[in-house]
Image (cartoon, rainbow, N blue to C red):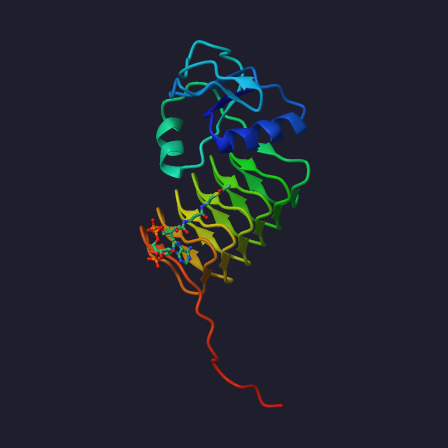
Length: 200
Ligand SMILES: CC(=O)SCCNC(=O)CCNC(=O)[C@H](O)C(C)(C)COP(=O)(O)OP(=O)(O)OC[C@H]1O[C@@H](n2cnc3c(N)ncnc32)[C@H](O)[C@@H]1OP(=O)(O)O
């Protein structure tokens, strides 16, 4: 298979590919200063004529860059799921998507194209994750959460059940989201407060 991108995220994907028994035949990056990833030499800029029958993954963490590059690629896309991930049989996963080590995806969730479900993230039942989303390491999505296209859910965040997050949003690392987030919003923080005292 082929990788596009030679940064830190490409190192993670190279490891997943190795653990899935796949060989990286070429690794493209437009930054010609980059020379190798995980011992794999950078081939050069993307070349439509090289290994035309090999599938490719865009190994770039930035959602908007991943989306832009995907429209320029002529190779077919492939998805990778690390063997340590637990993905329920009812889950659907699009093309170009990577499910990283230790993540869990529960029943009836739908994961789009070119999504990153990063290290140890937990996506519970009936979630809908649109294309080009990045679910960062350690995120918890409770049941029936919807994430719009190209949004980033920052590391360690928790999204409460039944919440919808719009397109092109950023949820800051460590946030707890309990209300819907409108398209394009950047949100962060968690503010637990006493909301009532239960009778004993
Ligand atoms: C494998 C991987 O690494 S995947 C990486 C996935 N990426 C992430 O999880 C990061 C998500 N992004 C963030 O959390 C960002 O910090 C954002 C979007 C919330 C804010 O980014 P920016 O607007 O650039 O804010 P900036 O870095 O200038 O910080 C502004 C202030 O907010 C604080 N701040 C930034 N992020 C957070 C956060 N997540 N929670 C609480 N405070 C924060 C900063 O400390 C700073 O405080 P100060 O003014 O007192 O110094």
